[in-house]
Image (cartoon, rainbow, N blue to C red; front, top):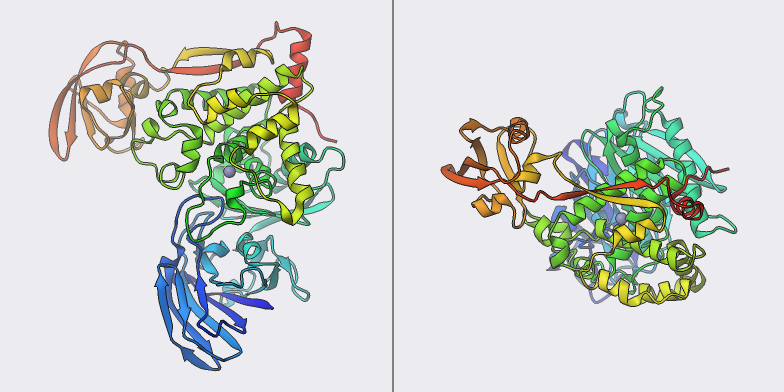
Length: 601
Ligand SMILES: [Zn+2]
């Protein structure tokens, strides 16, 4: 049987969607419905049910009593009617990639935030009727989604869309409104991108050309013999905003949020840092098509949408993806080698400058993502290691170790392809990756025994020997004093913003600010009797040397504090990666094979 959903952007000004779900032969003992507590890919309990404003159940033309069982589960009264409809209103005002948003200009929704699942009926196919908002202004709203259009509905327009089951329904977000749009092919498979938000003179031709090249490189990585992506169509749903950055991966689409200034304008020839950041986001979410959307932890097969799904492997699913996002840009020729090495150096500096990596392992960080990585507070740099950033560095170290020990005949690419072959050949019977499965995959794909090393990097807190590993591909790793940001280097703190008062956002472990007794939330007002603002702090500090003593005035809860602070004698280090031009020809070949530019077609 088919579960029928309908979504109406009924009151865009009030940010209200009207949703109905209808099913035949409801449970005669009282049909239950539940809304997911989280959205796969975003590991935090979000309790979307808190946005349901009112809900009614109808059967045989009459209202049915509904009882709430817990925060996201409803049970309808018993009925012998053949059909049951639940109608409810949802407040949608979360302009992000992971929930639902509606205003008179646009809408973007994830099914997890909108569609109640009838208990026990999650495997049945779904039909979704999407209506335009009322009023003439919305007459030309278009739509983009990974869902398949039913017969009679023109792709890109409101109408009826289909999903094989509930999991697919909520894995295909929908973006509506007026937007810039392009269609293009990647190895013969249609792709499309929509960009909503005002972006003056947006150069979508360039975006389309770059995305084509990038996506083709990804497909070739996983399917080198017969390049073909594992879906029939793909959609990039993009929100351009003034300030924002993030993405969420789905089986055949991704939702992206980026700064409008990061997108290229017509006539712009160069590759700005902002545009590279946007391409990196696209690359990241597209790599997830394989890594996490298909190759996935056993603990996610199937997802339990009612509660946390614990795995110790996010370092492989997010970290490896974070490693490949920029690497694939370099390989596709969208990032030059120096640009790639600079990005890698930045990641390395961030991870190595924080003490969190010595206290929490990558496996622990993965497991606790729900309460730590996704719910960071001011102490996060001292307590939460990023399974993205350190995971990417472990992927780098693993890749270089494999390349070196196999004389360049194997790499992490082979591990990814091995994982993908297991997943593809198992089809619907795919069991997912067990918690030790990555170690096993490395051994199977490369013939190397790296289990102890990888275990120490992921279950323990040992740092890989980056300098030696990078040398094998002719990259020199230099450590320099991180003096470009004096308040971080000499005081060991970060401020909340670049304007207004100098309020401390974070205090770094064991640093001068902590030792002097400063704390997050304190407002710096003077240094050696000179007024401090965020704009002046670094210029002021540049006049001092490491180890100097300064008098600090700060407010804590409006009470003035007088402190003496000794500027750091050992400022933190930053890492600079540079290609060694004196490396042998053989080593240079390894470097090219690893991150070299390969022009496509
Ligand atoms: Zn990711």
